[in-house]
Image 1 (tube, rainbow, N blue to C red):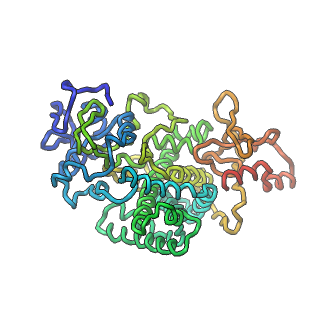
Image 2 (image 1 turned 180 degrees about the horizontal axis):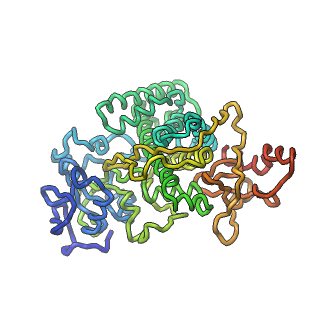
Length: 528
């Protein structure tokens, strides 16, 4: 693969001398370090490397281990899609074979080979990933979306009466765990302690090993229970798949699914909520009907992917990428964050990416994230349901006081304090029944900005007209929050807009309480 940026010799290796006067922090060989002083803002450092080297740049990991950073969008896609040239199997990594990567290397947990589908190749990859994808395919997404909606309201009920909340610590860090415990088949394991253990394990603190052990104990109990008594959940389908996964393989893949989905979705939820609440332009587009919540989620996946880099890919043979000579055994960082802002595909970063899903947030090729639809659903439904409950939520601190914890792999918002008028708790859906239609916000119905209504295929050959019911908090469907990856449904022909008078006196009150047949149908179809 080639790039506009070439070296004068046509090849380049990891001992390239940097241009004089470069502000990036340099290692002994003149390469930019991706850690330590000078690497506090990796986004800025990546842009410096792009200006110096183009789409593929040499750099140093911790302990000054050499690595290539793939900065170009096309180059990242080429790497992850070309299994004949690049692999996730770190056992061929030259610095590891030469003993330059010690067992206690800070990134070893990310890099070390494990017997899981994301590191496997060939027939073994097909066997393991086939089992995971088949188990994913059995997930009832309508049921999952109902659980997301219910869990969101239960979480909001905890703080809605206080008028203040931290939407990271009290919401974004809890909702994905509640949903994933349900999907895996262990809803009884969801608790504040499970959330704390997962966060602690991912932070790598002094208690991370113990926290990791707590999560693994839960997965071990789940594996034993479902091996003896299968049910209709992800774990049971993974265990009973014809691939015949061992208990160790089941546990390792449960760990992979739980931690990867949890960390990614926590970051995605926090990023979307911050943008909606803090950025007036973003909020105006969402609130004005030009953007739905799913589209806001996709924009966030472009601008702030949950994982900024994925460690790592390794060259199986000598090759070329982005005009650089890549030697057999070289390591390369798959880098969604800089790849998504590649100026060759996004010359204007302020331009909307509405309708464009070609971002790198979920990877690509044989190792593309198989659970991305669940992650999108958690963000779509969770954000919309929260904004429905708290449409007046405002940032309770100065924007410049917001803090992040950053690593080479991701950037995590520490807290998102908000204030709002205290609200009464919402009645539990368990007592209301799952068929209850969430109330439509009555202020106004604003159509998307398009020349004429379009249609999406509906059930049984019908069609659904695209539109967006909207109020101060965000978009909702006539029967509930937005559906993943789609836009919303307008009232049926002849049905009055919410802003139009429908009745007077007692008849108006009764009409407000009784959903129309179309609303009830949409509610059932979208899983609410």
